[in-house]
Amino acid sequence: MKKGILASAGVLIVLLLMLKPALLELDGTTRLLALFRWQGGEISFVNSVTGKPVVISFSIGSIFNKFHISTDTETEAYYSHGTYDLNTVMSRDSTAILRFCSVQGIHLDIGFYKLDVKNGCLEVSLLWMI
Image (cartoon, rainbow, N blue to C red; front, top):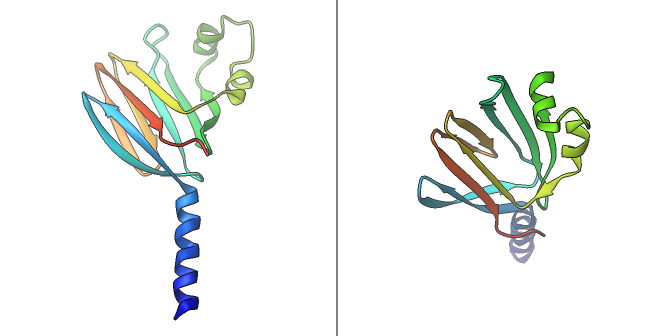
């Protein structure tokens, strides 16, 4: 009996260490998200200047990291002013907070969640960075 309880407690501790709780602020409301370290996400939108689609993917570790952008060369040059490789710079970035605003619309897939925002903003903040 004690071995079963200890094994269950061990599994629970491992799951808690893998858990990345986050707060989502969207349309004036706040809700709790349950994310895990092995998950990732994608932000997709249309660049309002070039009119081309942009997809930014990322991983969830101790913080959001391993960012990668997929878009056309014109839109990449718009963001980088043509002076550096955008993915090289983005892959080094990490943050505990994701913030996006859009008039045309944004789609966010993060962990188990799928969110759409049009004419508004969203923010996802990790609650602990360990």
